[in-house]
Image (tube, rainbow, N blue to C red; front, top):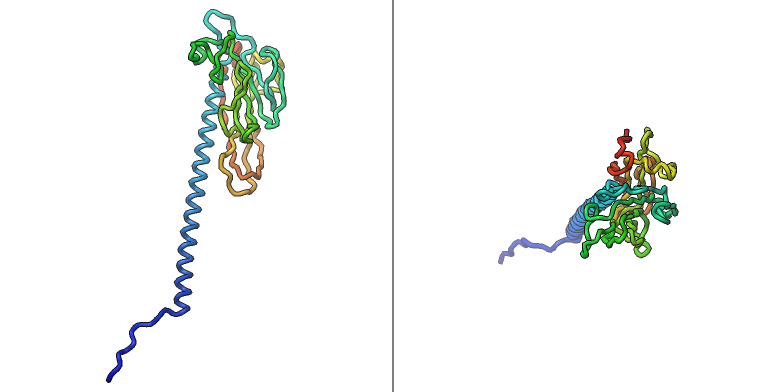
Length: 262
């Protein structure tokens, strides 16, 4: 009686170890690829939100600055159409405003223009409105803008304080606002702190710069960016920062009307 050759055998411990190691490598590679793709997606989404916030904020600020001083037909020019504060927000009476410091070191500005159906969107009752869509009963709209951290969420936001003196956030992510002003006869833009009350009527353009903080927290590491003053700044909270700026003409300023903006 002849015996059949034994053609099958079990896996050895070495073979099982190799198979497990290869399987583990494949799993780790897949997880690493997933994490890399997820991080890249998060960075792209954060960058898109930063750009959206910057676009919305600069559009709002640009529209307000362009409208500063706009008069109603047949009415006299608006007195003190624009005034700013360095690292402070504008407070007090419209025509004799003063400055109140902000922890955010954001600049603040006040713009005033005629309250009519041409310069503002009408409310549901047909009345002119301020930057918050609130009806304005006065002849002049006064809007004040600045950036600060929200008292409820801690997130930085661009705030607008309308004629009703009610401040509300309008764009999230705006950490700091910096505004420099061009005056007639000046060869460079001036900081608000260097402009006397009498010289604000000579402002014909503004350089607006905003610092936008990212919405997603990345790895806790020190990052840097160039701030609105052109200086390197460092943060360690894992949030991305980007700086955006725009030059805006104050179309209705007395300086523009007299042809003095050279």
